[in-house]
Image 1 (cartoon, helix red, strand yellow):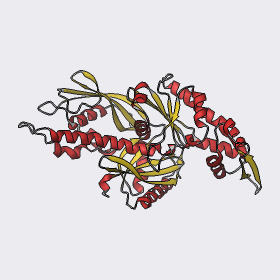
Image 2 (tube, rainbow, N blue to C red):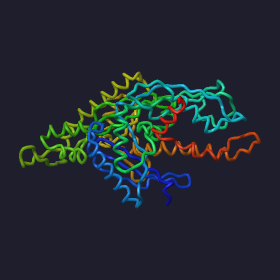
Image 3 (cartoon, helix red, strand yellow):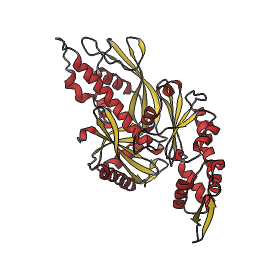
Image 4 (cartoon, rainbow, N blue to C red):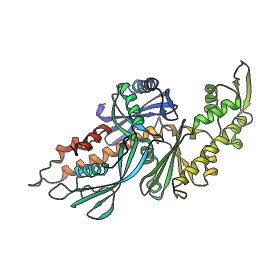
Length: 422
């Protein structure tokens, strides 16, 4: 197995750090290894302790390496948080080929042109996502490669993040001994994988309920148009259980994972468990129904706040409804509570790959899906270019630019952008 066929994602969450290894063989993609470790040094999705986070990353990567028997050196890192922002941009370039056929190089140049925007000094560009391309005034083009034109434009979404959050994330991964291939916005990757074409076009909301926070991504007209983060998640449910049962947080988390139910009506009164009370060695019995009476109000609150936030973003009616993911939605009864609180169509998204069929893996697999999607698009462009006959006056050899088609990392994109002004 060649390392060139392997890509690795790193999902650094509040409760878990997950390293997922994917393999591309003859055009097919499979998950071949998963490493997971308890997350230390992360609070509400933000890094608060570099050394502890580094140790968690190393543990997850070591676990994945042992499963597959390879050494991981490069990773695609997921990023999320309330510091993420979106803004629209517009780029224009002249088609460079003498025969006016739009190629991969023109796509790269017009996206770079869209990156030239005024940003506050404390923010950096993470990625650029094309909403549509315009060729000589013809709008609504999703992939202009191979078309004939003189003027190429792009309407794009610029994804930005706070410099301290980005640099702390990069620092943790680098101190773990890993090279960062690129940063990927987790809600974008998860949305591209989990949402159908109609859901992305008509309008829908992807909701990732993690341990420390809840990420919201609104998709419309085929792309992500808004994002937000609520500082509430599965940890708050655990804390409520710890207070309600008067037990340690660690025990509360175990009880939640084993007996948790978000709907009192679905909970079993005859399922009994014991917990040790704080300040004593005495154990007390509780039923699953007792536990659900604590959990249900908090889950209702999460979806109530979610509904209010989507309205604040300006999207009250979305035909595609809500798509839920994240570890917290695995709890029985969450879907029913969501349907009641949101009064809309709701479903849970689960990755359709062996070994990761759990909502908690959606973000990590989504990172890989986003990378594969971009690689396939570039490879198709290269293949199509090789099929074209060589023209006498064409000075561009498509195969010689193959290296340029690889998606550059965040740092390289910034260097290339500023080099145009020097």
